[in-house]
Image (cartoon, rainbow, N blue to C red):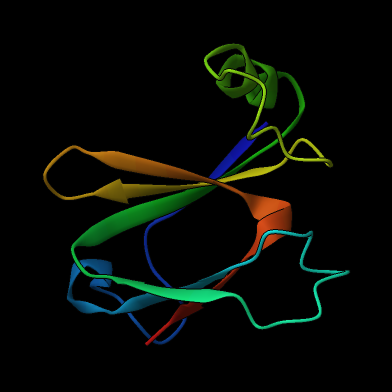
Length: 95
């Protein structure tokens, strides 16, 4: 299943917001550190992907970046590019 979001309750134009991710090596539920901070702008939507749709993402990898819970965060940029993260290894904040 893929759930896609194009805004938040307080931010209607997502492309103007700053997306801040904290990416960890271990699952975020077990991580002892905050992780690496990464910032993005120009994101027009984000998706949480799991279930059968996650299998499509996993089929396109070398196996080293498969999420333990088979959940993925996909950022969709206004230029058409995407970035995919293991959802169990990332916390996302929108500012």
